[in-house]
Image (cartoon, rainbow, N blue to C red):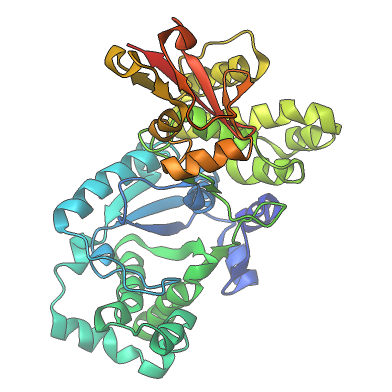
Length: 409
């Protein structure tokens, strides 16, 4: 019988584990596993997708998965990878963020019959008495041990480290101990940046309960050209349709580099290995069909099948010139008042978020990267009116692949 660990390795999810051989044997039978998501924003983004899909693959393999929304740990703030202290959010902001994250995770995990559960660590962390916490948890950590964490060392040498941040690793370790006791959880997953924090929980369980628990972290995913996953010229690619439209989300995956197609199929879809191998064998020009399938599958998981097909139809209309509807292309409406004397293309580029400022829009035009319809804009002072927009609107383009539709009211 294949261990789930072998499946995860084959799909590219495993960077490091705390005890590889014992964990492999443990994963031959159903176990409880958890991953935590702090509520620092109302939406997760593409950078979270590796851990989400890792959890979803464990879910599909028959393991009981626990998604922990960090309502408690968010109030402390994870310093990992940060050069300065995170802003302290209000309880109201955290509650709002929690709701958004929970709705997104529900698209990936099967909660039927208790196969997946979602919990909030505020439910146990907020009830802890400070002295009791120091006695039960704090006594098992030395300051020297905590300062082995690269982030803590760097912060001490730079902007400084607050006492509240120093406690974050202890809170996360206690999460693992609590879930071990209450849910029988024996595996925590995360990204490589969480290795120290996860091992702290493994060590706490060993010290307090004299039992073994496991850590598994996934690799940092970069593109074939070395770019950080989930970042574009417009910023982060969010899972929320309000922050990143399904069309823009679909286009992000359509822009996958050729060398990444097979790897991203394995990480971000549930397509079987043999079907992925068929796509990998396609010659260069035909890889576009593979990217269309990749974009469709990932968008369907995040936004639903209907939204994915609408995004695909819009993309075909934009790039193919025929077939499909432009309705799903991100659209900005301008009023008759704005169009009376014409509206500067520079202003439209800012309104449509194709440029962050008028100065950036002017630079884009000067560099030959701005288009209205099929025509390049050469004059930063150019204006367009109702006649230029037409009944169906007009497409603005920034660079080769970023489009936005302008429609007149």
